Length: 123
Image 1 (cartoon, rainbow, N blue to C red):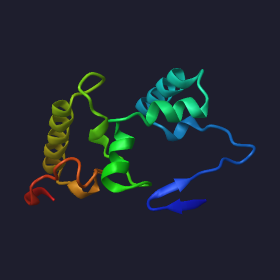
Image 2 (image 1 turned 45 degrees about the vertical axis):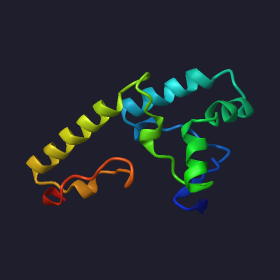
Image 3 (image 1 turned 90 degrees about the vertical axis):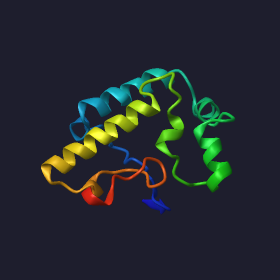
Image 4 (image 1 turned 135 degrees about the horizontal axis):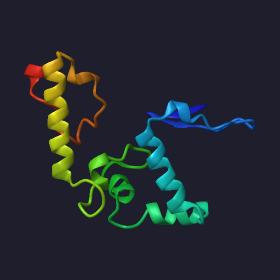
C-alpha cells in the first residue's frame, strides 16, 4: 500500500469481497447513493463531474496544492443535505454530549481548519 501525505492508494486483491459488516447503516446508505449516482459513468466522467470549476477539489488545489485534504465544509452548499448552520449545530450538540459524559473532544475526528474546536475547558 502506498501512503502519500495521509492518503492511501488501495488496490484490492483479486479475490476481494465486499464486507458490509465494517460499515454503519448510514455509511452503507451513502455508498449506495454514490453507486446509484455514478453507476452508468466511466472514470473520466466521474473525474470531470468532481473536478468542476469553483468546486471543492479545484478550490483545494488553488489554496493548498495537489494531494491535500479537501475540507468537508467546502462541499456544503446549502442546497443538498444539511446546511452549514445545521452541521455546526450538530457539532455543538456533540460537544455538549461529550462534555456531559466526561469524554474528550479530542477523540472526535475533525478537520482542524474547518470546524472550530470547542473551548479549551472541554478539551
